[in-house]
Image 1 (spheres, helix red, strand yellow):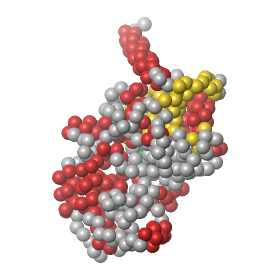
Image 2 (cartoon, helix red, strand yellow):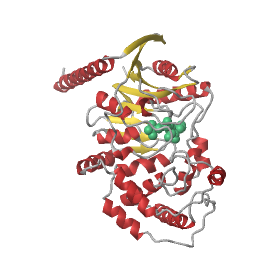
Image 3 (spheres, protein in one colour):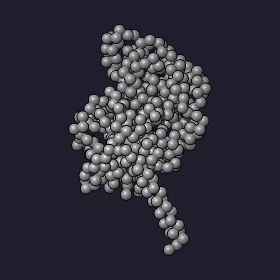
Length: 421
Ligand SMILES: C[S@@+](CC[C@H](N)C(=O)[O-])C[C@H]1O[C@@H](n2cnc3c(N)ncnc32)[C@H](O)[C@@H]1O
């Protein structure tokens, strides 16, 4: 046997040993104080670990995550699995990244990251937080952007905005879209665009709009007009630049120079895609150590329509995106979709790597999507490592694992975990 083959074998054995040690530690961690149920599924014994994996009070996520997004999970969820199942430099992936909770958390922990979401809005929300600008540069740039009173909008948004606020929004939108067309948006512009996108509408003082639904659930113009009528309210003036600066400060409140450096280093090598999660040819075979994700929910959320105003601000055609986004109320269709996603995940996962899929419970537990996912994972070659069910005190918005989806019928969340043999 050549020296090269011997060295390679020793290296492989050490890598396998390291993975096994990590897995044993993880299994001890999830076993400890868990209520364990065992169910048979597709010829494998599948364990359900039920406990409070952490209390959210003890572990508050970094301020940089605080971008609102429909059906996002809290950063504690990906953090738990990233810390337990990967090492610095390993690749963490989320095929349905949304606001990028797994991606930003992975980057903060020094992991290489790959993110994907079919809605290009996702990249607009994720990328700028990997390349964080200085507050004073944001302030200076905002001061440089000229107001343009002659800009006209094709959409009537007078039910959301004071006329002067709208001039400010339109001027900013025009500035960003023009620079994007010339491909000259820099990190400061991208940051401003992300913050403005997040501040378009909301239910408290520091939003550009008058009182409306929370920022992740933009409502239609006609429904907003109805709210205004019922509440007898007229949009007050809001200072767009001031609100962007306040939000920038709040997002950066837990970020120090070291974080900025780590995020930038990870950002330089990251891959952000806008593909269908079933088809990601840019990701090589056997490449990803951990996928941690939550797929589109069965039947309940219109990811594109909920973001129509955000899409308008960013010049994204919401109808075009709606057609691509997977929204289905048919379990059969959802199963077919997730089967193809799991086949793709199997292709890109490293041997001994992991996939964690967070799903809800539909119809008050009548449909257990975790059981469906276990079956699909096994069918596609994965080994089931169990289902983690986090028991936490409920609030009215399905708070298990910190998911704030405001969704009727989704009342608990479960992480289905697989390893690739
Ligand atoms: C439950 S959300 C993910 C939220 C994410 N975990 C977070 O914390 O923000 C599901 C995401 O899947 C995306 N999506 C829907 N259909 C898709 C598809 N076929 N391929 C890729 N992404 C898709 C939606 O745009 C949405 O952002």
